[in-house]
Amino acid sequence: MYKKLVTIVSLTTSLALVGCSGLIPTAYRIDIPQGNLLTQKKVDEIKVGMNRRQVQRILGSPLLIDTFTQNRWDYFYSVTNKKGTRIEHHITIVFSDDLVTEIIEN
Image (cartoon, rainbow, N blue to C red):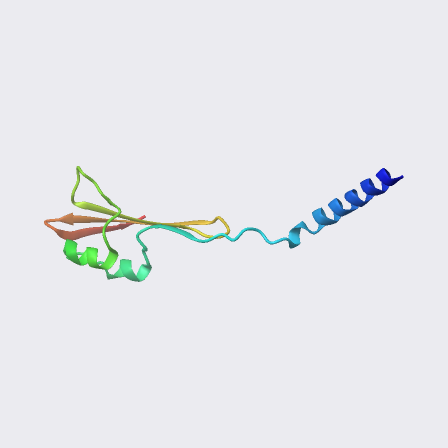
């Protein structure tokens, strides 16, 4: 009799906890940013004809400078928010004679 009572109580408790599982808070997750923060305001400040130093002052050091084509700087920004959604921004700045000739937003 005692074993049946213990079994019934433990099953009832288990079912009650499973039913309330939506009420139990999950672990706290933070946003995870990577790369250079690229806001549209910063990108709009970059103009054709600017030199490398001016671009670096606005956007920071590029994430990638290609060894074989030194005239191209790549900036990448990625953030994964708490819900797991990933947002990415990528721009490429092309230089000729140390002046911006092309801005490519991907």
